[in-house]
Amino acid sequence: MGFSDDVKAVAEQIAAAPEITIISHIDADGIACEAILSQAISRQGIPVRSVFVRQLEPLTMPQIPSDTSLKVFTDLGAGQQNLLYDRGLGEKEVVIIDHHVSQPCERHYSQVNCLPYGHSRMSAAGVSYFVAKQLDPINIDLAKLAIIGNVGDMMAREKCGLVGPARDIIVEDGLRHQSVEVRKKDLNCYGTATRPLHLSLAYNDDPFIKGISNNPEGARQFLKRIGIRQQNENGRWFVWEEIAVEDKRTIISALAEQLLANGEPVDRLLAETYGFPDEIPRTPLRNAQEYATMLNACGRWSKPHIGGAILRGDRGVAYRDAEHMLNNHRAIIRNLLQYIIDTGVRELENLQWIHVGGRYPDTIVGIGAGMALSKLNSTKPILVMCEVPEDTNLTKVSMRTNERVVGRGVDLQQALSDASAEYGGGGGGHKIAAGAYIPKTAEQEFLDRVDRILGEQFAAASTDNR
Ligand SMILES: [Mn+2]
Image (cartoon, rainbow, N blue to C red; front, top):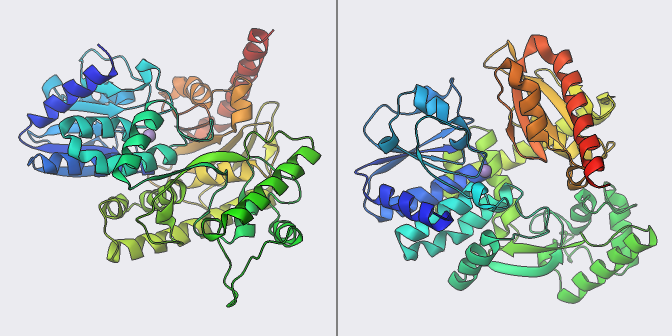
């Protein structure tokens, strides 16, 4: 049995179902999964409804309807199979479409998961797309959605572009369908459709460029110095995607020079990026990264259905609502970022941490942590704790690091799940970003434990490299 056999088996089970409930995650990847599969399933003439959950856990299980529909779990489920078992769900009632580590379970639920086949850089939206395409090849219009989900889950980050089946099949399908444009050697930079050039450069810290990263005024002066026109006759700032190819080349080579002059590697300066030519210019819908941020904003503010509506093409009320959420999202994250910088983190041997209490919604704390990292000591992972509004006895822990630190042996998902095992676990995520829920009373002990585990991870990796 290979990945495509699993895809086939799951597609057959879906095609044979009289009605379906999709249970998906509220982030960009999960929202994309839902939009891909619910459209593919509707096109089969099968009635389908969807439920979004922040996380599959005992608290959210009641949201899963007790009816005879086939329950299709996307972007979650693999790691929570025992919860499905405890709920009494039978093997014929469940399908799991996921990319997270699978939990051993007595009951053998149908599952298609790219991880056991070594496709570690494909998200659940990618897997969902393969199932949709198996249901009907007409669904290649959904490749665009799968790319957004993959990019939203950071699958393009490490290698500066998508790789594996996500690149070779999904991106190629998008190109063939002409709804996706590949820019092979684009600037590795966020905000290319909506941010003024200098802000786009300043907010970028991968690679970190001295005098430009985290320095909007420095970036503006840099562009001026190399003769780039930054505003039109009305004073409106240009964005990266609308400037001339020659200007792009000038900027890229000047940035490369700057990096070389500082003795920094230039290998992360360029990336393959994915644009959507059929969307309106200068909107977040023009490229996969910004589109994914918009979906994440919808999810974080408990409106994943609005993100779903946008993926289905709604450019009316849903789009306006999403724009507001995106602005609000950015403002609060900026505020959180400033709070972390102003308050300062405390350092342990292998990590730095801060507790933000109940000041910010727990759903954005991880994002803020990731953004704060580049302004702090980026060689140590950051750990942020916050209160959980639904349960005053719990503390939510979010951790973030960068590729360089992962390259030195760190696995945050492993560290958090090991450290929280004693309290019933709850550690989920990836090597570079992970989260967990712990009892409020265990905060200090937990910090020490994570610090020790990270120390062991660093040590183990340096022994391996000897
Ligand atoms: Mn995912």
